[in-house]
Length: 80
Image (cartoon, rainbow, N blue to C red; front, side, top):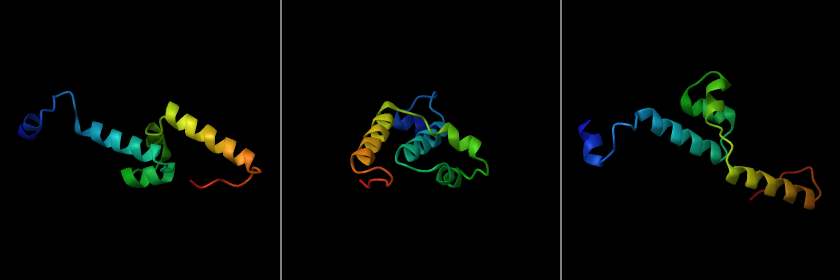
């Protein structure tokens, strides 16, 4: 509590919020469901799916990737 006060963080922020943010960012960075499960120490995919939010940025990246695949002949993924 003293550290939180010193850092200027309100009591509305909980430790789990950091875990959620970190795993959501890992998912956005491309972590698979299995990779998220390993990071979180879960044995089922149900919990990992919570962190795989769809965002407009991610939707745009997927659409761009699909467009590149089609333009280049389909089939194989294009590396960044």
